[in-house]
Length: 215
Image (cartoon, rainbow, N blue to C red; front, side):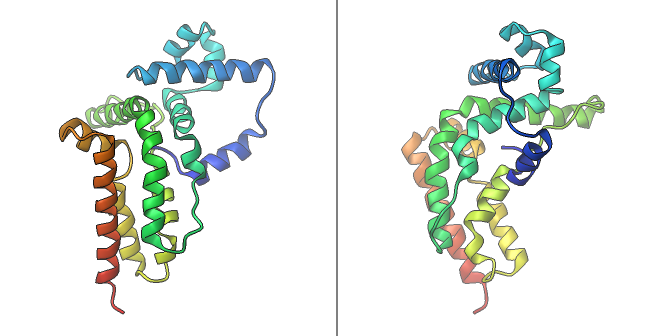
């Protein structure tokens, strides 16, 4: 899924307070149009969104200077409350379970959007390999890293730093739209079964990491 939550906050500081008036309405129109297109499975360019929203290209590029910036804004919109997730629990296993329970229904609701964003990421990688990407800004992903590290926070003093990082990396394999691609698209599981497998795997990973840590 994206840039980190810290980077998103930094961007807000740089951009200043939220715009109001006609500018805000135009930006909102473009964001809603891009969201509609991505929910239909399209990964639109800035020009395509401008045309669909009946906004001039010059205006569109003032708000979103690249396709990556546009898709990032739509992804953040789709993630919505996930980016504000927090837990009062002091138990890492419970916190991870709460995060998965909270996030996966929202990710599934915006599944088409996140798959369209993933398509852009893969397309940029392929063009980079072929040497045809040029100076196009990369679409970066990383929200899950921050979210999972937040969920695992109680283990920071229990696990060695390398083991803590390895656990977060392992959990990232079962959190996000990729989970839906594997379990729904390949295995044919429904939403409840997908969530159950994710919770089972997450619990097993956290417990195994703690067992491996010398007392």
